[in-house]
Image (cartoon, rainbow, N blue to C red; front, side, top):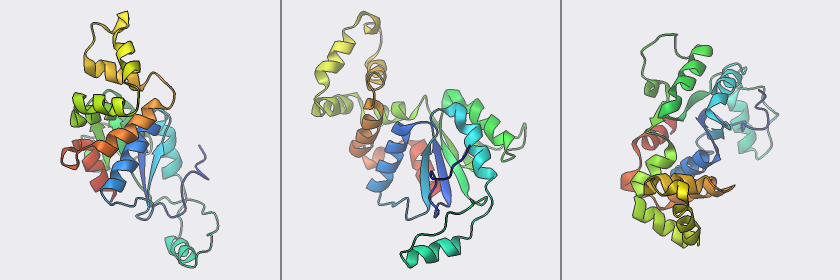
Length: 217
């Protein structure tokens, strides 16, 4: 995997997330906390699925070192730095779903960041587990009523109610309906990942998301 053009030259820490909705949520919450991730050398990378984590880890670990002093000087001079060959010293972390932990462990084992059969908690390696997934964490934090109010504000409440009325949905919970709804239309999952992070009470940030931002910054 070639990450040239994906990582900024100033990147010192990479946060790996499964998809664009996760990236939107992480970046939005960071901004609300006053954490300018790019200025801090932190970049969130959406992998396009958890099964791609091994390829991303391998590409990042195999990158040769970059001289950050040259990058910093180029930025200070407001001149573009030459494309760096990479940076083996980049810190790696991320978010993952509980059911996908095996992929994270396999990927870390593959690049030597976690010795095979080690018992080191993944949190000590910068990887934080969501209970089910990040959307579920955000839904619980915002609350069902809060999410429904958000859907209403987006002008999609009738669409959600139509989904609830479908025969296949009648025996499912409202939380399951919300999951199905945000994944039922292209771009909707990313949009609601961002919007949920925008309305999330800052005293109710899900534990894995809070821990990730603390690790990254």
